[in-house]
Length: 112
Length: 114
Image (cartoon, rainbow over all chains, first blue to last red):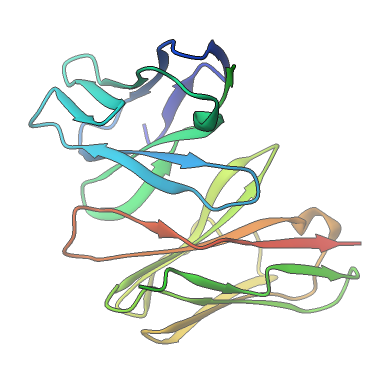
């Protein structure tokens, strides 16, 4: 019940296309859902996050869509650029703990 | 503002040796997390501290691993004795207890045990 399932494992998108990464969770106590971006040789960096009181959050080209009833959330990258090529992790936390449970990651490659 | 600082950035050691990884969290943050990242197991939480107190060490793989946080600005992760399977990138992250839940990661220490 503590898992966060992420898909796909890898994704290839053409420049200008839309990248979509999905995550699902079971623990209904989760109330914070961030996405992290990691470039090779670097630490994960917080990209965008959402709480369950809204169904969507947008920051520039990045949007989180949240479906509380389905216990799913997704990251959409609009107008994907080669510079977006990185590994993306979803995560969740909540309840009595402030620790994050991470998904397994999605390796995104945006082809020019 | 300085981010999370980790040292060393790279460590190569022989099996059986003691390894100490160091972390300085962002000033004002009162939660600190140690993670390990490998291709096989992904990003694993090893232990975390709130207000310098260890809260959850269930991710620490074995007694060979220990972590301390003697004050709000410093933490160590020690492996003694080290084994080749400990080879990984170790990240430290910090955050605010009263915040939204954000964690900010350091650059990591790449550990290679031969």
